[in-house]
Length: 95
Image 1: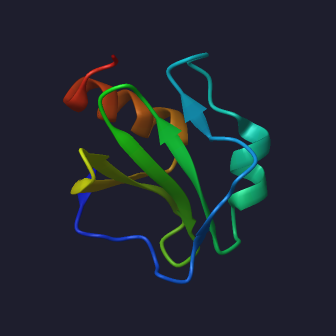
Image 2: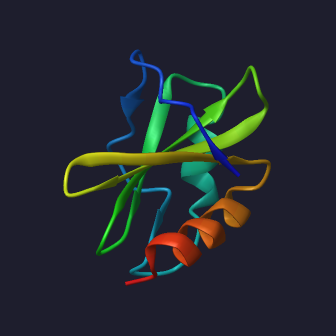
C-alpha cells in the first residue's frame, strides 16, 4: 500500500548487505531480522530504482522508500516484505 511516510532521520543504513536485490531475487531474511525493531534500514537494490527498507514498530509494518535518480518518489508499507517487493516491481519495473 502506498503511504505518506518517510524513514526516520535517526535510522542508519545497514552496511553489510542489502535486504533484497534483483541480482538474486530473494529477500535476505537474516538482514530483515537484524534490522527489525532497530534504528536501521537496509537497501533494496534494482537497476532502475533504489529502495530503503525499515521496520516501523509503531505501525507493525515493513516500510520502503523508493528513489529514482536520487529523487524521492514514494513510500510503501506491508505486513510481509515479499508482498511489498512485488507491488514495487509492478509499479517501477523489475530491471
